[in-house]
Image (tube, rainbow, N blue to C red; front, side, top):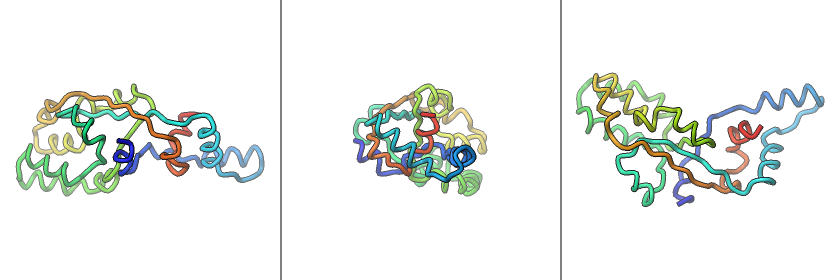
Length: 174
């Protein structure tokens, strides 16, 4: 299931480590690669990272067959049309959300702390993309009533994550 999971980009919040590099330069007077140093230290201690994903799923058992699929904007748009109709208002709203689709397409959003997943509205109110469309077309309760709040936890090896994706893991570890 991990290899299917990692077909998409596992997206952590894009916490920059520039602040740490700047602090290190001020204290030690030399440049260093904070990400590389933090990842090496992290990888020497941990072999896997437990990640969490919160969602509101119509069929929670489906994750056993398909894992967590990366965000698929075409499918979300089809679902929006199915839920709210093929009206000009729905199509306008979808068009206005292109910035969102560029940011989230192909990604799986995860947290290190399961409690963080529960803070966000995904578990309780459903997809923010569908909720935004629902709000614009005057049907906010339609999405909220779908599915079951679902919290998923899974392990990903440190090698699978790789140094280039360690932004938030390193920030949280600090």
